[in-house]
Image (cartoon, rainbow, N blue to C red; front, side, top):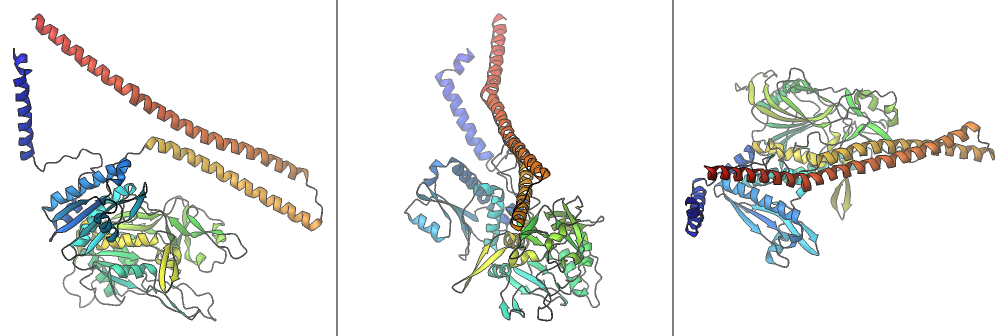
Length: 616
């Protein structure tokens, strides 16, 4: 009787009304409650981002431009746009009305499309039309910040980019960077060429966005308004200044420090009496660095056989690999300073060694490979032939830190100078924020950028990520303290890791065989060249039986290696296809079959219980 009432029209209507009422009550009582069940917490803002949003004083308008009508045939981009929208809504929800969102669809040939172009958003052609997908923010004084295009493959940096945009719009004035340096970063005069030197591009670009205040190494104190202290290979730093630098760090100041055992760009003035100018030594700051748990040997240079770059060997010589000039990629993919940097070029860099008694946390930003070692600085002083570095080179078997980030508690180690104010800070438990780079050549133009003069305007064409590395470091270190510790968030896309692992293994094997073949080909070409030279000199040459046999053996070996290469590639495809077949069987057959068996079991159990109740 009860079942008949329950499934009658009145009963169904009553259930529907109860469901609607329950939904309304829960939406009112549980408003603002959120549960993020994704593995990487994709829809949960980090504590740093929450603090940045809570510190907004005046309203900030954020415009998300997305050409929804143009992207109708690009479902992956539409899904990513939806995730961006939801993330922005989370920012707005926490801002309590101070972050005002505007979602704009810049339809082709509309005023919104003109606004997108005016704001500097990047248009991507899709199906003959322009697609816009970027963010524009503006504050109450019409200061504007723009993210020109939101690339799906950079989703890990999305939260950082949005938080950075909000933090910048919350600032009333550009950050002030203090600069202590003994290097010609502002240009100068070339005595050898009798021409003026241009400022380094990286500092030219920094001055466009920041206020740079230069500080002498023998100054007694640091300015009080610094957002970041940047130290680049000073010639001398007084004890008073070293004490001031340490106190700056212990009071929460951020420091970006460049030291170099062999600063190639810092040589004595060249002249007729000094055609090979000597590299000048920088100040030894290890007494300061040891208090932060690290040290840099100023008489040792990192040499790396795996990451060495080729340089020109001269007009009539082949390029040679220079073990001291390295192309490195970021060590920690979650570290925003080195994220999305393909290669950064370093020159005769030092090693940032972590001390055994360090109380701080030292995180590598850039490391050499394990095929590296420390060589004496003197080997690089006069080096007409860099290939000599490879002779008798013995790798140490461990990676060497070239750049690190230092965080964590630290104590004062520098003695207070006479007449110092009685406000000495002895320690900091919340942690210092210091980045140490054991190279200064990474800042120079020749290592990362080609500068051209275009009708009086200097145009910089980068060929390495050195500039991006410096800008990432300065931007993050000079920004909000919450922004400094904000790391890359997870990605929504889940790659097929097993497939990629199989592909990498096979490609590594393929690469090794390919290198072996290339080496053998070079040997053969050298032999043939020698034979041709002998033929030209004597007019006639008879190949020996050993030479004929060697050439025949090589041809046979070359065939075997080529067959092995084909086998490796074939095995790669077979492994991936086999894995794909397994996944298809599981998804198409096994999973539905398991669901059917579970449903059948539940149905049989329910039928059995009904029979038992009817029998009673």
